[in-house]
Amino acid sequence: MSSAFKDRVADYTARIERVLDRWLPPAEKRPERLHSAMRYAVLGGGKRMRPLLIYATGETLSVPAEKLDGPAAAVEIIHAYSLIHDDLPAMDDDELRRGRPTCHIAYDEATAILAGDALQVLAFHILAEDKSMTALPTARVEMLRTVAAASGSAGMAGGQAMDLAAAGKSLDLAELELMHIYKTGALIRASVLIAAQSASGLTADKLTALDRYAKCVGLAFQIRDDILDVEGETEKLGKQAGADSARNKPTYPSILGLEKSRRRALELRDDALSSLAPFGADAEPLIWLANYIVERES
Ligand code: IPE
Ligand code: IPE
Ligand code: MG
Ligand code: MG
Ligand code: MG
Image (cartoon, protein in one colour):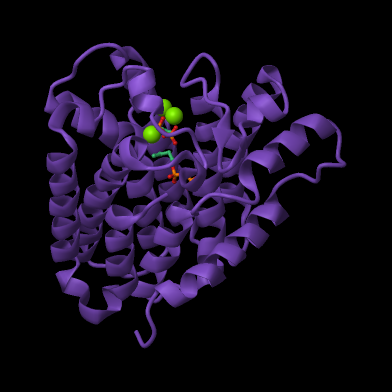
């Protein structure tokens, strides 16, 4: 890999924006308000971390980006839907997301709920439909299964249920870790896995290595999110800082303290990096992202 992945992040971010724009229904199409809310929640913001992980895994495994556009859009759309619902009054009750009013504030609660519903199934529609993936039916079904499992009650939705049940309670570290692995880790893990499922002839050892990387960065990502909720600034984050303590959410800093939380995130980063050994220099994009995940300021 000649130039740092950092130099390609803006290109990939612009790329996924175009792909998302193409898959989302036009705002002028009936029902206009629903389509407009879907586009509002997905387009024009966010770090696009999950698509970046997919394209980075693709670079490492020499999978062309065209084959990964569909999977990247699908996972980002699931993520965007999860954020719409996460911000609803019945959940975290937040009014600021990606530097703008949350979907239910910009539109209304019912529209936000439906936008989330419609986005969730759009993701599966893309995985089933996208021609550019040129995936064999078996690989496509494998990807559908991976994203479904990561999004449901044994993944993101399950983690969100644990998160709501934990408000105002104290969890032990194992319970907190499990909640984070479910609510955030699962979809990040699925991102790397579906990119790997796009590659042909990947050995079981290499798949296991990538899976280990993905598990580590997925948990580290939510630990960093918890840390930023304590020490970040609302303006830079694009979402309300201090929201977790305001809602009495158990988090890494509330249970371990800031210093140990930082150390845990770095340990996970180091584990993630060591699992990339079988890929040598080809893993440069994934190495860069693992570092970015624990150092990011937003
Ligand atoms: C925020 O995710 C919610 C979590 C799962 C921690 P991101 O930090 O990826 O949010 P965006 O997509 O960049 O806005
Ligand atoms: C959200 O976790 C995880 C999701 C599945 C959306 P948070 O509630 O901590 O995410 P933010 O901090 O609101 O982005
Ligand atoms: Mg939440
Ligand atoms: Mg939240
Ligand atoms: Mg948070």
